[in-house]
Image 1 (cartoon, helix red, strand yellow):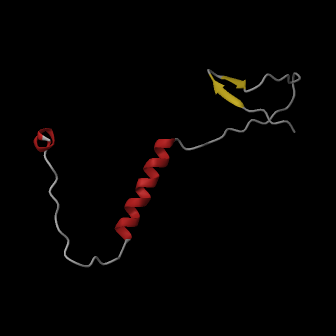
Image 2 (tube, helix red, strand yellow; image 1 turned 180 degrees about the vertical axis):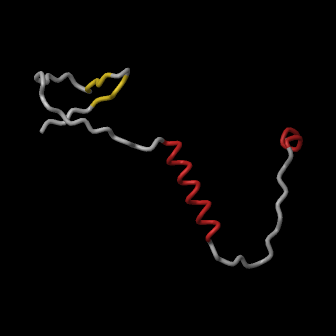
Image 3 (cartoon, helix red, strand yellow; image 1 turned 30 degrees about the horizontal axis):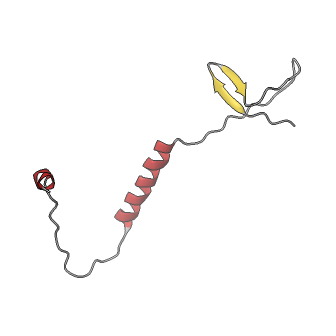
Amino acid sequence: MLVVTGIFENERFIPDNPISIPQKKKVIVTIEEKPDLETKTVNRWREIGEAILSCDEELTGNPQSIQFRSIADMEAL
């Protein structure tokens, strides 16, 4: 069995390297399905959110609120 890699573009298969295939030769085409980066990122954030929501850890102590600087405060620096 010979494995030929390449890309599919404009309704044509373009191999990474030139190859000669005899006419009427039976072939099997396998399409790699890799999730794109955006899908991976969204799934990862979903996992993080679910982990936070399902966490039953009790917080101890007295949490203190924080004050973020305004844009005017930042520009004044």
